[in-house]
Image: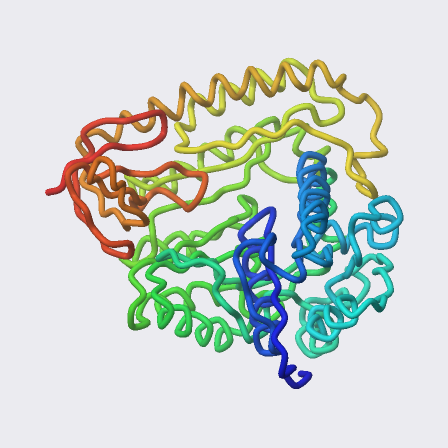
Length: 466
């Protein structure tokens, strides 16, 4: 790592997209701080704005480009001097993005993260760093998972390395347990620019978890592209079962939450491990994507209404009050009205706590892009609206079912106007799964308050302290 400069220069890391990107940004921030850079929160107060972009779906790409243009406009004030694009959009499009977006002074891929401090100095001093040239990152590692760990030492895996600097102060933090994905879903480009699946070694995960605990983190949010594959490249698919109690037993850690469980890979042993440990939250992030078995096959996925309802029953038999969230896609090529009806019937029967609805869009380089029988944009929009309206009704009903439940709320903020505390109950994941307001209690962030649910506001709960 380059030695820090004697003259400090400032940088702001702007993060878009998922919690996995949050981890990558904090790794970048840690590397830059170690390189002598001063980290600032506001891009308008920084010499360099580093925008960690998202390239998942069309809307995310647009949001990333808008953010780069907005950051570039700050240069008019004379304070912000350079804007650098990193992250998934930069990795996915590289030189093409640089050619089409002159507002960005550089477009850098994952392989530059280790030397980001040097690259930013060069850019800030008026030099140039070559734009990233995209490639299929799946080809960087062996096809066999068993041989990947030794080979991965020579491949950039964002979020796997220290140091890390927290960019937030809340009582929860994402912790990356793996990167990449070996599945070949027809609608998804992530494996091409994130690469093949690679687990972090448990010792590395535990070391970072201990450090997060010293930073005031009380809830660990385990993230990856596919958490149910954890350990397969380390020779033990049950490794998560052993890791969870170790994480739960760390000093200062009160909660552990596991994100992105692939339904087709969920094992009974994993469900048993999750419900057996009190510190592991009864929260199941199951990415169903659809309910029609034939359509799921066209998506290169497995399952269907019967299998998914069976999995939900397995979860609720073990943990009756568990929270279950999912995402669904409508408008995939060939989707019929009958299949949309089946999806609606499945969602009605499933009684999920939170569901994200996405309209299908062709993604460069995916199998879906080449499929016939495209669904018209107008029909996709109508299906998104229809399913969204249904889900809002169903999830509001699900929240009302929780009236009378006793919940333990991890406080994230205090409402100064009302004197209430706002946080999340055990069944609520961070950011998009709703909140619980504990009325009449002003508790500092990181405090856990026991309360009884007395009302709802959509998917949000209102509770009174017990």
